[in-house]
Image (cartoon, rainbow, N blue to C red; front, side):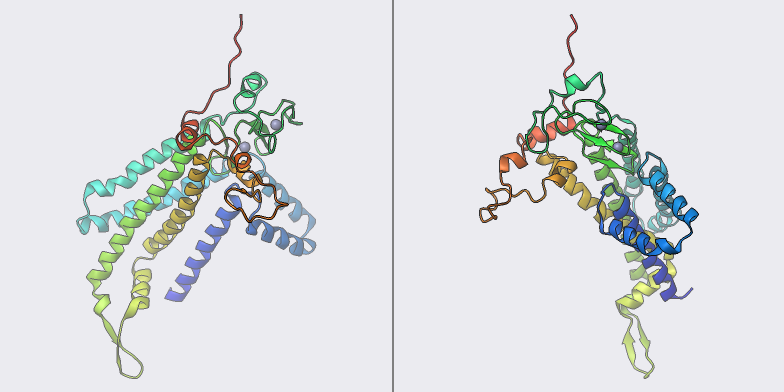
Length: 344
Ligand SMILES: [Zn+2]
Ligand SMILES: [Zn+2]
């Protein structure tokens, strides 16, 4: 297979990964979503009815009902990366005298990540139930902007506690609702936001660490090959230095799977690092992704004195639930439990 074909396959797969993650990482409105809808509209009239119904049903089942598809995909991708790392990179690194302790770090991180991943999947995010709702109503006051007192969920038929939201995928109201995450097939709410944050950080650490070890291995391979100082004779008989493109081509052709994995890891690392930072920010200001999304366009007069007067402005209302950095973090890691009614 020549270099250009391999490179084209590589770019296509990376693009598919980007598209998949953008579409299904729990955000409802993404550019890809709009693109998919438009493609559906254009292709729709030329598609047989049975195929349309089938694809609609499959998409609905996959993305609007709880299912473990993304958990399996997650495990599959992780398995592929670890298999490649163990099968090829590990041996090369040992040859290059990388210590066993630094090579064991990815496996330790895998164990830590799996633990938090499991907790994200299994722990109840804080479902609003008939039994608990009276206690859950007293956890947060209503801010009078996003959350109004006395509003009931039409599906659950229960009064909505402040900061709760009905998850359409799980068909339940969740206390301090953040978002529904397809990768863990669970809502992220009051009781599992801490595990979700730790899970995000451990995945980033895992991807970052394997990427560094792999990058180091490839760098050593290039240095050993002497390609940096190599040269070739061009069509005019002139001697030319090999250059970076030549080095990249050499790496692609010599270690195709390893280079492919490294590209995927770098992509995953930056994507998840951005996502983890966003969720850390939300934790520090005591806001959920749901509240952040609904507060867009809500301008703080204190931070933006020149904001147009017709925009809603009030810093205290935008960060209504913030009680200072440490108490906010405390609330994530030691979430307040529903007040239990005393029976006499
Ligand atoms: Zn509900
Ligand atoms: Zn949900």
